[in-house]
Length: 274
Image (cartoon, one colour):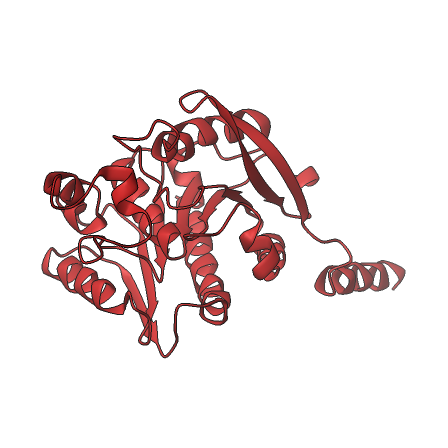
């Protein structure tokens, strides 16, 4: 009877958050950019009792920063606990679009996130050190980043997502510093094709991918997400596509992230059990 009571109390404490996830704020050196990049790392409360954890790389949007997710969506700490996964939120600077800029050496964020940060995490934290143990997603600019980095680095990430993502940058030639990173669309149209998610679909192989895309019907990126969904259907690329009333704001993303983490948890469990 005493043992049952103790177990019940421990479960109750976990549910009410007495043993919350741990939030680390670290600086990770980027050799390619020759600077330190601030990064938030959320460890589940079970971190000390297990050998290795799957990792979700969670990217912020334009104008955001490394601590944006943990401040505006603190529920991700509870989700880290619930699913037993590490969540990594790197700083992507203002308007990096998570690409390696061909014009600005200070913006080399594809290399940083998909290579330098992943290697640093696998060295310094108890991660599942394989494609099957990594997922990536984000909101807005970070939604572009989640799919862009995954499409171009399929050996690194096993599951991919986007929330309200700018999945086609071509209709927005004068917005959000994109031209500062890759040059103007008029002068460098090929760069706009090469650095948009919609221009990379030829890299995908059906039935080898786990993709989730989510966008609200009142979002200014809704039309480009609809086109991405239609093109994935046309190419027979399986994916989850969620849309519902909602705009480009934290009310929507706080809802979206719950579905995305459930999706990624299902993926991690499926490969773990193979």
